[in-house]
Amino acid sequence: MSAPSKAILGYWDCRGLCHASRLVLEYAQAPYEFKPVQSGPAPYFAKKVWLDQKFKVLSDFDFPNLPYYQDESVKLTQSMAILQYLGRKYGLVAESEEAQIHLDLFREQINELFGAISSYVYFPKHIGKGTKPSTEEKNVSREPFLNKCNADIPLLEKKKSKIAGPWLTGDKLTYVDFHLYEALDHVRKLIPGILDNCPHLSKVMDQFERLLFIQDYLRSDRFKPYPLWSERSSIGLKEGDYETDSYAIIKWI
Image (cartoon, rainbow, N blue to C red; front, side, top):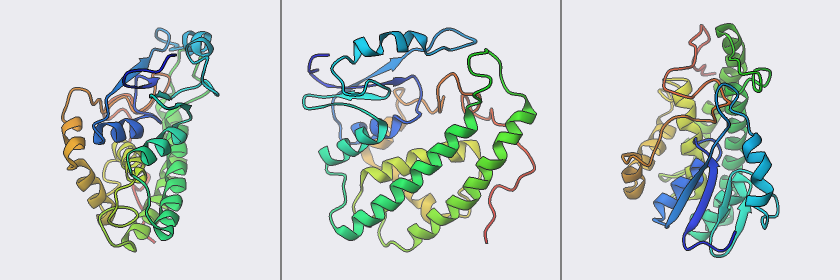
């Protein structure tokens, strides 16, 4: 791939691990093109089409994979490498050692949350068979996801309550605020009401959505709230497709 006139961001046609980087590009008003990668046809939605061509399409990338990002200076894969690069490029980074410590802690905790979300929405034994999990299977998968959220969301709320200022590291907006917004938006779509008892996190979410260019993007037809993950997932493809159950939304200790 030759150097593009505007940045290119490629990923499955969903939010997944890519959308936080897209939010940064929108906020920075950076010229870019999102190139959705298509899965195979239903009901299998196989990766084969992409796997057969990725080493050709990304032949000059070090580690061909999705998501991928290219601008006039770099060719990157790995979602966090892309997000951190964009954070540095557009000044969305910590400005002190104390702020950097907060940023590092939040980033890694949010990464764990994304891992829990992915484990919840994908059912490996059904992928490749063209089948979908039963309600019982979804509820079994939901239990560890709820347990993880029950544990982590209060800790994130408590940590944010100790930090003065509107953002995770204080007064400075950083790429980790974009990372947090994306993770918590997934969670609150999958567990409605999860942030009701989290005033500090809710405030971060509200003020993030009011950022000038973010607000414009979220109201535009460029933004698709769903699917959260690729077509091979079984939950989060559309609003309300999770199965409710008897587990508590959140438990405060």
